[in-house]
Length: 393
Image (cartoon, rainbow, N blue to C red):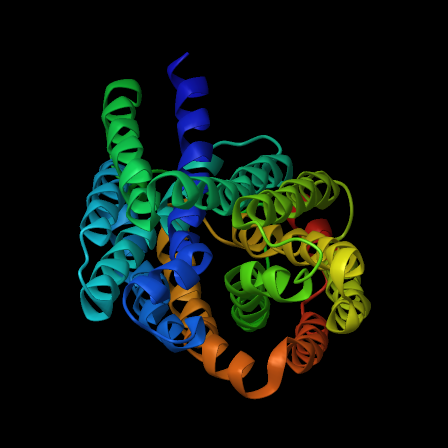
């Protein structure tokens, strides 16, 4: 029972992680009006600190997860992100809000290098486990879109931070009671990688993982942070209610999240490289279609776009499970995230100026080019077949 409860809470934590990072992007227009900004694009750069720390904070988070303990770090995650959100709800100006968002990003950085390796400890079907966990994370994005829109309409943007903050602290209390303390840190345990590669091939796989994660992160950050405003712009004259638009966006994320479950199961059954390459290439046509879509055509294009962007997410965690010993997975994940998310966090800072300068149509065309860069990077991933034969022998 404790194990099932721990798995449930770790998956909920993934939803919480992504939800808190997108509250600001969903509520930015309302916050900008409250703080006296003429355009939401001018306030958007104040949220970049959250995503910078989401990346850079992964490095110390991963190290502490392996050497200190993953349970202790997850407790810090729940209480830290909840308290930071309450501070954000009290902000009286853009710089106070920026500081609070940076704090949210700092604690949010704990989950990926700590929570996912904790979830995968001893998993018999890691691909399926990653898929379900990815579904949970993306449902958090859907909840951010729907819940933030509803709370803003009923109680104002401050409630969009305060209510989830209180819930997150409550989840931390439950986590402390349900998940038993670790008897030893992960670094002290015996472990092993699923697939044995030479050092050169491991280094090459980790380099590909980091570069593909960076380009994939740019796609993920620019779309998830910009989709709310994109829908508002392209549905003008068709639908204007923010709560309804929030529910529409939530439906896109909820349906697209199922792609991670499908991809996770495929990862356990087929070769990783051709699967990853196919999904990266399929991102290109749907981004090109979305660049010109209006109204419900935009809705259809955006749904396809998010299906393939979300579908690409499980691959980096799958590579870590296949190639890296569990004793150091949090540290490797932390190093990978620090580099890739540090790069992709610039997308959040650039989102407002890019949309203001070139519009969403040109931005989506640029993102199609970024998707091609991801596909090109995946081509350098080493083949697993010789490695599997060697490991079996």
